[in-house]
Each structure stands twice: as structure tokens, then as C-alpha cells.
Image (cartoon, rainbow, N blue to C red; front, side, top):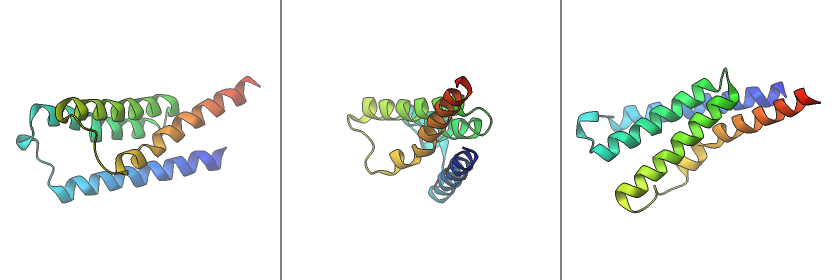
Length: 113
């Protein structure tokens, strides 16, 4: 199980670094955002990254924060534009969050036995 946990941590770190590099490359500027974009950006990337970072210490809580942030991002985007974000990248980024939840469930079941 420790190997699984470390794999999740490595994936989380890679996703966080990738998101931060994309933000830097694109020149992440708040003053150019609409209201909807500002709310969505609080969920992704900031809420999502906060969830992954929390997952290093509390896997279940961090996984929930990241997954709920991504769901909220999709919801806000849909309400604002009438469509969901295109491309697979947002869902690929969610993989470590889902794995954090899976790890927490497996650990809980292991403790109960």
C-alpha cells in the first residue's frame, strides 16, 4: 500500500507542477477575468491544487476537496457557457484526486479487518 500512496503523491506533484507551469505560461491575470471565470478559477486551479496538497496529509479530505472543486468548475463553466470544457486534460488532472479517495477507502477497509 505504501507504494500506491507514493505513486499517488508523485502523480499529484506532477499535476500540480504542470498546472502551475501552464498558468505561468498563459500569464494568469485576474483583472481580465469575468465574474464567472473568476469563480471558476477559484475552483480550478486553486481549489483543486489545495485539495491535492491536502491529500498529502489527509487523503480522503484532499481527494474530496479536489473532486468537488473540479465538479464545481465544470458546473460553473456549463452554467456560464452552456458547454463543458473541451479536451481530456481536466479529467486526466483529476486522476490523482480519485486515487486519493480510493487509497483512503482501501486504508479504511484494511484497518477494519
